[in-house]
Length: 348
Image (tube, rainbow, N blue to C red; front, side, top):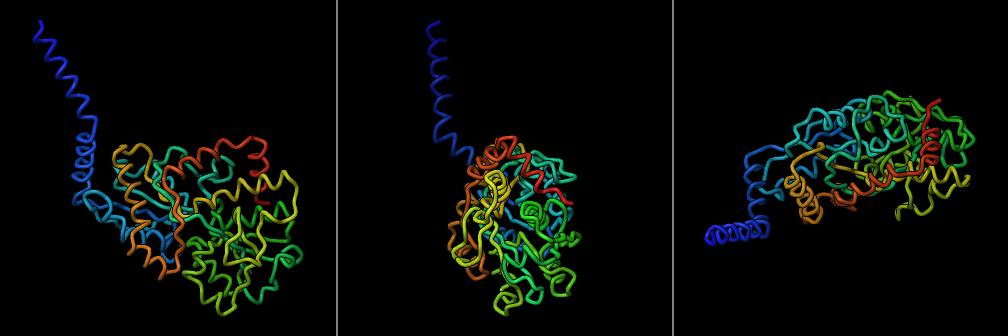
């Protein structure tokens, strides 16, 4: 009997031992063994040539070497419904084993809360959030001959603004501005491949401008338009101004009621996760931890940072755990503020 008790005590001691560093090493080995020789799909919710695509392709070139087992990372464009197609795919269809992740329009994260994104089939709080490459400012910009050179012009003169689809930033922001500030603006959707299509629309005279245009994307992919004075930047869309744009008004500083300002804050909070990356819900915890660690390491990788600088991509990373926290806070917003924000996003 004493021998049996002694054996049981030894077994218990061994059980405690394997939950320490040895267990962590075993987990790391298991993750490395899983990823070795595999391919990780990086789904991009827009067509080639836009800001989300560029960020995803740049990240994919470097993140794999920071994941145990060093898998190959392959971007795959999945445009449709302003990014909803990609989000639904990640949530409902994609493998839940850690070999699929994706990026999509940040605004879609809060659209189910506001009730305005048609076709959404996901719960944002349930994604496996990996991180965001930056928190950033977006802008409203207009073609040089549109007659819209500043915010005052936008409040007084009729204008048309191009958008990819309902629920995308390019549609949400101008709609909110139109409703809260009574702008004489028409939002034209249907530019399904995103920002590159809208730019062509401005150049052809199909629309006069675009809103929800990420400043980092503008600088990295459309800087000739800025340098050649082909566009006028008239408004910043974020919670705080960008240091590059000290003389361009910030939406949060525009005169409005306290209630409208609270709604604007909720809508603009998406800018804090400007380039989000997530995996499907329910992937194994050790693989999510490995992806988050690899993402954070990539954000400090000198080679990645050098390429980002060359491409004029802003890197102001937000760790996955912080993205997850922000999403939960957003979904805890008081109902009266949510209702007002939802009304502001309604298309006329």
